[in-house]
Length: 321
Image (tube, rainbow, N blue to C red):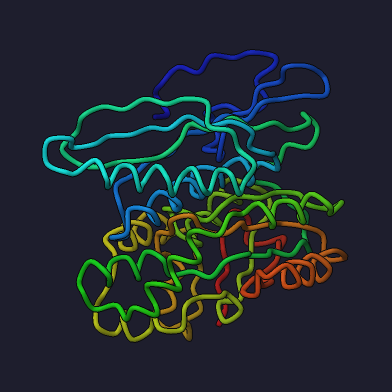
């Protein structure tokens, strides 16, 4: 969409220019609003869990900007002639329960008849204008913390193919229904957070590439430190690979210097398109261990330090095994 004309405004803090997680507009010197929207088709069979996942995914953009979501509006596409309304009721109930957990007020929405069920939210959040976090930035030596394990895209593909163990499907669903609220609140207490994004459809490496694209810094990623569902290797050996993984690899291949020792299955995990993934936080090394400990104490046991900001090569990811 680079050919679209952008409208400038002195109060627009974050717009469409740099593929940020959400837009931010200053209302006054001490208050800005964050706006985002996201919706998609079901990725699990249970409509109640699907509703929860869709809400977690939509709210995540606000958390990634460093803000607090306060209101939301439902977006619904529903095949009313071919699907019972009880399914829609369960989807909305799941979404409502997760909004209540997040402290978000549902204020309305819009629905249309469609051949395929889709659900999501338009979300409004708040933040101090001077505390907005972007998906780019950082100083040499900064550490990278990932708050959730990878693999939800592979698991979803396996579920559709009927080859996923129920225990793995349940583990993936628990991950996707976990709000990034706690991680965001702990991140807010740190003084040296320089950037943040949430890991979603472009995969872990796709989003890290976004963070340093065209920048005068690079990243070093320790592949073996990245958390993931251990059951994924067998699925990948059986060629359960999402189409999005292939697209992500093709799009970012030239920006990632991959250690030859890194196995192909791990590269697939690092490019796996996530839904409702974790936060990827860039912060000073002096606070990284403290934040990691706090995340673990609050139940985010998979959170890990996965790499650091480096001086060179600029604009590239160095992936080591």
